[in-house]
Image (tube, rainbow, N blue to C red; front, side, top):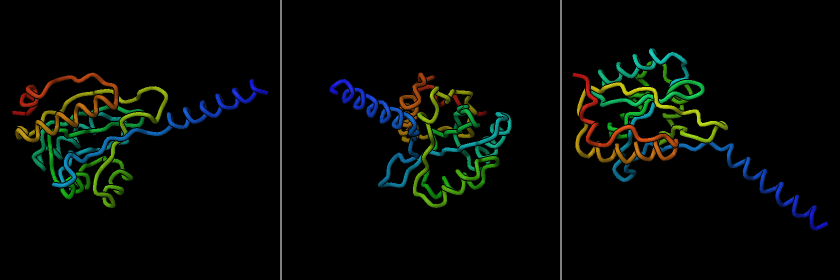
Length: 176
């Protein structure tokens, strides 16, 4: 009887563990909630990295954005502008402007005061991998570099990816 009880407890704990693993881990766009400061996220459910890059470049040129970090996922790509700290109203406008952004991602951004992007936990294997940096149109301010590095490090920690650069290299990631 005792053996059966122990097995049931182990089975319940195992089921709870599997349920927890099925939850997705997300990263929030908020940098400073009191001042309405956010970084820009985009979720693309297209498999063509060229289309994603063209969309990112259009946004960079129109909105004068800094470098974009593109990460591949199982179903598409994420573009993260770590060094563009803007109010959420501008984040919404940028997402509305962007071509090829996932329609559900665009729709949901209208009804929340922040964006959340999945960074881990949906699949058994880690499916997020670094693809490339698209150089930006401007140099980030000192405050944007500082806040962006914090969000970049948070992203690396949550995804399990190794950081590719330090804050001093950010200034070199700008198109001339």
